Image (cartoon, rainbow, N blue to C red; front, side, top):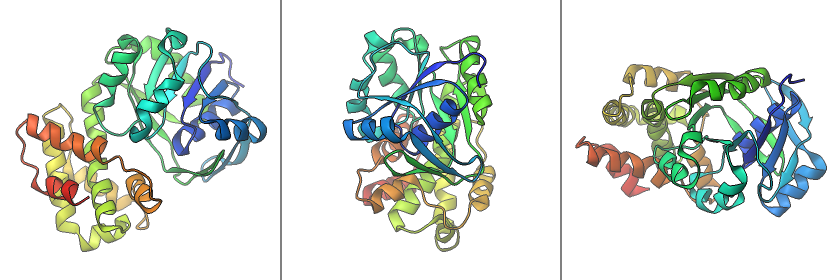
Length: 295
């Protein structure tokens, strides 16, 4: 059990948020999941059921509310970008107060939105690397043998992040704090954008992209890296390609899964943000431009 238990809110207990909620709850932290009425009722009665390669199968008891009604130490924002504006109504700034806001979102433009709504010096954008899917209300399948989280200390002093880092590490994640927020977010987008855009455009898993669309993948990685480097990201195309090669061939991006399920796509947060930044920094991105237009 946690020695210094935190009270943590999870906005969006889906594949990522649900896994985090369950891991923190089972190590003794108080977890309040924020979601719609049906999900709230399910979580209150059944908890969160996790099936995990790394942690085994377990059920964690959590609290659940349709909106935050008391201060918390931290609130993880784990909704899709397409649902962000509506979801934030569940976290009133006056209630959150001095709590940390930890967005685990795709893209690079959301920190400004969150800092306009909450205290700017309490927003610490995070990056999560995990394959975890919500297969039903309160049921999470964690497929990757890891869960890695980077927090950023741009405006939030690292000392204020330490209790959360300790809690995440105790819960089983590999967590570190990076001091360059823009570089961290762009390093992720340089990897994510080619994976998401190509698998979604061609409706095939990563293994087929690597073989049948290898030239396009290589060109798109070069474009995203060129943009990312203008924001200070020390991103290497060969490193990104080797990470793709290490993924199982049947791997799909979350955007591709959304397309298959008929859900709205995070195209603007991923592809749109890339194109806007490329135009601002005057970096040509013809492959990315075509893919975004086709999608």
